[in-house]
Image (tube, rainbow, N blue to C red; front, top):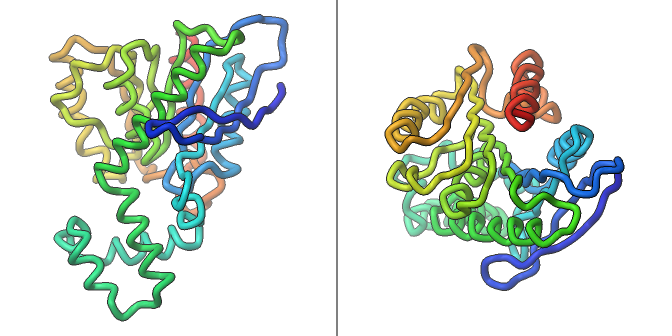
Length: 265
């Protein structure tokens, strides 16, 4: 396996950096998997997932969606502090940027900026921009001579899981999609999905998992392929072995087998 640092053109013409892991074998073209990061950005865990995918014979591309000012503001320490504040805020404050900013008036400027940036990243407008940036990764892969352009998949975790399936609503050539504990797209967008979809969820992650039946029904009504599995006792981020408080080894091991079988089928 070899590793590359590349960039592709995003939704507003900006350069989006990415980590690429390429299988080390004699095959000239490979199916490809776009690995979409969690809220933490392109960290060592996501690069590790890309390497694991490459060892299975797929070219893996993991973009860093935080570019420009987000690259500086979305540092792990700031993300953690921001998440703690947002989780403790009333729902109406979480949804309204003006109310949120007023509620932070007595906090230090750096902390206010970090929390407001996190809220911005979680907004529908920014998620849509990330989704459209991912379209650039599809175009990039379709242009690589070592990629089979008919077999490009997306796989993501948490925020990235939602983005991986959101990409499927705007990329009709996408082959397969794997959602790890991510939100489903608006149900009215489901008919635009042509990729086969696998969803993997934690049983105690009610905020995400409670929405799976409605998504499953919408996929079935649209005649789309959706398979899912919920792991009892596993929570959000159960696959992330870099976060011991969330990692669930048995669920993670089984999920990886399901991912491999899904991509190989």
